[in-house]
Image (cartoon, rainbow, N blue to C red):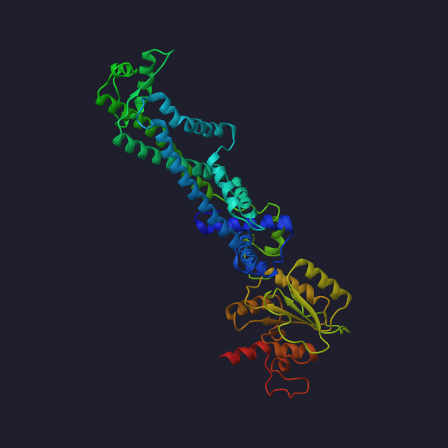
Length: 492
């Protein structure tokens, strides 16, 4: 995850796709990988883009959206339950006012479980364990609310992602402390309400302890609330509150203030401070999240999304030269049939884009290393007389595509290139022409339209005739022009 909801969704989706492919095998991703290669900068960005497109296709984005709705619903339900629990604890600790309230027992009933769980959370940092009971309860409820064949993927992907960047402890802690804050807020409101509307008698009872023990306990516990402005009973009042004396209402008001101060100082405030710390640390951890491309499932994508022939940075001064040279073919006559091949064309377009005349071989649309190797083996065994390579002019040319063109030209009698979609990608088609020219391809070996390219593939002959749309029996124009020049003049 990165800062913001978009970064969280992108990394979560990538982890979900990774886990799904790990369990049920790789997804067919030719089109999605092509789009990721064209739009992303760097391997991590391409992995995230691929995952986003696959998630949209496989409806995983809807799965994550359903899980988030369920998580919000579960959290809301727990918050409501915490409010009722806090109110119930207040009423249970004070009773109905008919009997005197034992102060220490009431305080223990209110703060006992909170103190134990809070200390366990603090100690968990020393033993590197994760203790967030209410946070774990929230995760359990979200699994119960999300029911679908892939429902388990969403929480598992989120947990693994948060665990790797160290944010899981803080997020679950934030959920737990947030619910405790709700409970204590409700508890304090109910305490204030019932103490304002009922008459309570407070005191302490003991068989073993002396009055001085209660004086010391009251003084120690009341130190922090006194700093927050709450009134504390004096030592003589504490000794007199043993149930054997009738005390004025002013003393009962002091005990009420002492009880409220203790609940606020040792209950609500620690949970509120812990909640703020968890939110701060969660934000920091999430902001520092980076995709680990070495993980199983991501490492296998490197060659598809960022081939070794593709340069990802400047590792040498730019000399303006292209190392790859694309020959026109070895020029020897071949008996093989003319062949047309697509080079990483969009997977959502039909192939072949144009119907092929009879007698031409279809090499398919090459979009993976396996297809590439199979085609090269076939060309070595059955060299074509003429080979037409169809490139996507709407994509930026890279060294991987140029290297593949050079390999295709080696066994072919003659190679020419069709820039498919040149009209839609005029800016990038110009980049293709420049890169191909630097690789040694003459302008008369490039086409921007299918009819002249297919005419050359079927009949061979003069390139000017092929690009003008003339067949082998058509008269040659009075002033022949190379293909790209003719189309360029026509556009101007």
